[in-house]
Length: 164
Figure 1 (cartoon, rainbow, N blue to C red):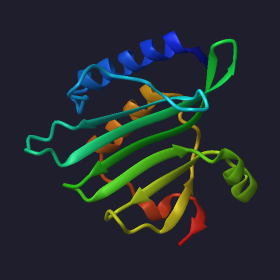
Figure 2: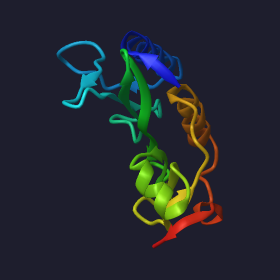
Figure 3: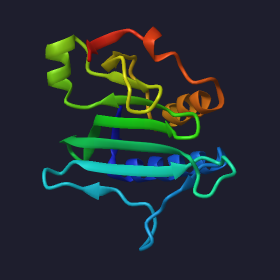
């Protein structure tokens, strides 16, 4: 997927809107609206954090959506990394979908994306599980919300890339 910086800003706003429709209370900066950060190399990135509506204060479940976009040419960017994550302290599990350090993961495992699964949190069968790419943050919200409302996954049943 290729986006301009203006389209990336629109997508971030739409992503925040979708999160709020799911009842996710976004942890927005006190000093203003959502912002895309620009790194020294020209990459753009964002990090959305939200709390799930579990009836507790503070909430015991959190979703994190982070993406990094690198410039390719003429004001166009491609997604170069993502981290989509659900941490459910009440049910003591973590589920995450990552794409980062793509060259290293491709060299070591033959894939550029991976998953994490911990149940209970802090205890994993594998450092990294095999995973399919997540299309975008919109799909990530759907996947993470489905994980939150269903039984915690059987982490041991997921294919392992790197045993601990």
